[in-house]
Amino acid sequence: MSIPIIIVGLSGSGKTTALYKMQSGQESRVVPSCMVPSEKICYKNVHFNVWDVGFPQRYCAVVRGVFFVVDSSDRASLELACRELHRLLAHEELRDAPVLVLANKQDLPGALTPSQLVEELRLPSTAQNEGVTQPWFVQGCCAMNGTGLSEGLEWMRTQVGGCQKA
Image (cartoon, rainbow, N blue to C red; front, side, top):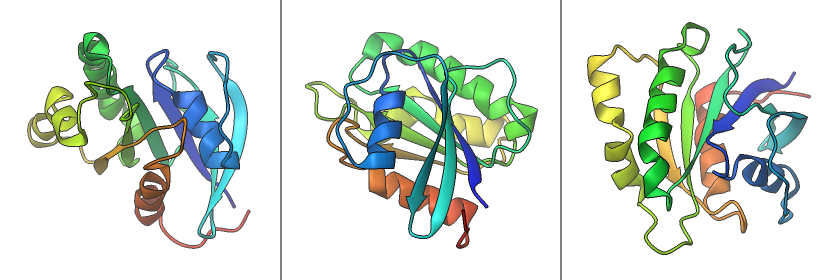
């Protein structure tokens, strides 16, 4: 059995690049996408079935986890990313799904650190004031070279748990 996961984020955040790097380990120059067929990622005996869905209006009720990718070097888009993340966290069908925020593009000058993104994305106030029940974590990464992606996969693996068979 595969664990269904979605990967979402603003255009240009690096969603598809992160997805293909996690799947194949290869650096990939990709074209922007709004929806890609699902990709399988196996990490420590846990099989993730990941869909790159941009920001769909509806989510599949069976989704068990979310990768939310943020371009941590694009300060101009942070308010929009924050609004989209809050909308995602409030979505009823994702109420219990763990959310991994991938703070992408850490290799670029001026990129915000994961702890700065926690503040910019207003994650503490979300969890404390809006009744968010799902666990979340911010992992710094560079999707182009893979830095930080395995740590993010490890966090998600521990959240969705167990040794799953494909």
